[in-house]
Length: 278
Image 1 (cartoon, rainbow, N blue to C red):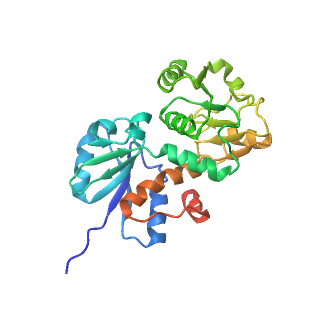
Image 2: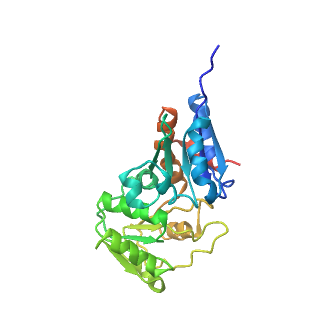
Image 3: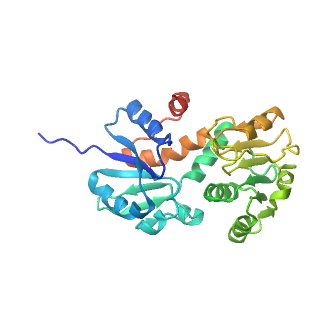
């Protein structure tokens, strides 16, 4: 009697023990009754190439990539999607049967699906967008906002040079503000995004004044530990529509799970509860 090979997937990073992705994918595998496993894989930068090349032979059908490997995997993958190339980072890998590696970036998809679910009335052309941060997550956000039709994006980062580099790359829709004037970017902004790590557990607090926020602004934070950041709490107190970062974590995982395990996973309250559970 022969047994079918059980598909494996995982999240690759260093460190990676804190990741909630195994909890999320494990929930989906159980709900859908799929015989598969999703595991955390702590891989050093120097071992990344050898590890990725060995994974298809070990039964892995794909995996997610997190810090610090999201840029390096682009150099290792056999093919890179236009989205991943534009963002300059990959978060989702698919392993072909012949061992070839496809790199994609679903962060922008996750950001936009979460925003639309959390703020169904959101209109990209309602006014300027304000974005804090200029790292890999910000690149995915900028790409998505531009694709959605936002005509002006005010960008600020503690290191101005990184913001300037993104303006040069993404074009005239990006308006760079110095960090000393960071509070000014929210004035009359229809969409406000924290794409930095400020406010995350273990990171510096988000101290930018948000006095200029309008009640009509949609405010979202990519940070999800804690779920209700001080940034979101302040915006909520001012009457804004707020969208936390948990949904982005969930939605960015949907395309990969569907490719690897052959079924589209549900996004519902039980999914969110699984991610946030003890």
